[in-house]
Length: 278
Image (tube, rainbow, N blue to C red):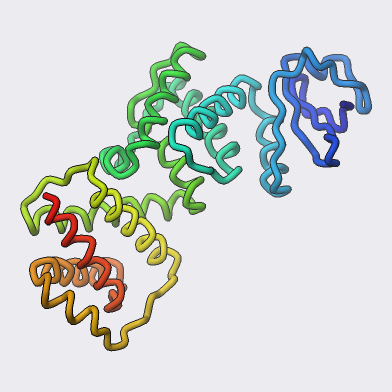
């Protein structure tokens, strides 16, 4: 394995057997080295192979300008997240999380505290990712002897949710807020507490997640044709239907989006299952 580019003393690029550009890291790996020199294997700490050229270039730019330990700790957290959740994450997580951890620690050292207004919602809606965020704080504490505020667990969690949904962070924050608003309407309409571990709650939140994603990406569902199933379900589950009418009015007023009959149908079904289980 030979050096193709020297990014700094700790990071170089090389070409693997598949003719792909890879990022090779290790303390002092490029010290007194030049292009085309052989990389000493025992000096290698991490090798990154990112399939998306655009993401790969951005990652190269990032790791060229921050200390090696931030990339290493980020990769450790990502590996834990994959094992913990069993989910696949967009390769962009290597950029967004590494950059976030670096800036969060720098802010902490400067005494700058950033609060997360969606910390409570994130904890409830994305519990697996939030647990990853809490573990990330422990990993950071062991590595840097720094106690980041618990709000950072929510920020880290949202980076993983974002890498799963492939959305920009402002859209993701909007999605999270909308889901919680709809849940609150259901909660107070029926005066119930949700069983956060129930399958019906998980399915409802998943449905809301993808609905909100469509709304914020302007992917309108305009299927408003006569629907016999909608009429039947509306009459059969009249209390759930009344709740959906409240949701419809709220979304129209707040987000200027009018629910289609098909969207209302699925909301009625999910809400009925949710209140039946409660």
